[in-house]
Length: 188
Image (cartoon, rainbow, N blue to C red; front, side):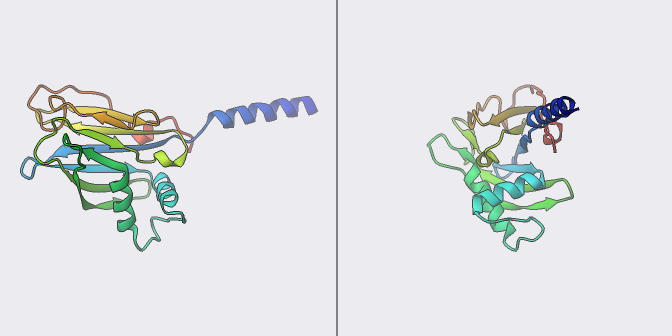
């Protein structure tokens, strides 16, 4: 009986160790042709966003109870998602807003690319500071239709944009698969 219990306990321990939480965000970017700004929408699960804001602020953050949530979100996003311009400067961050539902939390902001993506790169460390595996997929809408996806993770935090494949190009679109947070193999 003791051997069976030990074997069952060992199997349970191995299963629970293999089922770890993978943090994920999904970022959508489109170019506003009138203003020349990049419109950015970021999806978080409320659980992951609360953990990130808690870690960044050194105190427990509850999305539904926080009085200064907009300020905390703006500071967190400005620090963890950047468009680096060709001259080495960072694009201006402009807060737009947020919306939340039971399992979804969306944050909206704009980045001023100053008219061109040539030589630009994206630096994305959203959820990186939590000490867990994370994936952040940035999907860029292309002017000619279609999308281009960039994947960021613990090893890849900065990617160069190629204006011929990025937001606002006039070339035929290449479609690529998008990893949505709810499709990542994570135990919740």
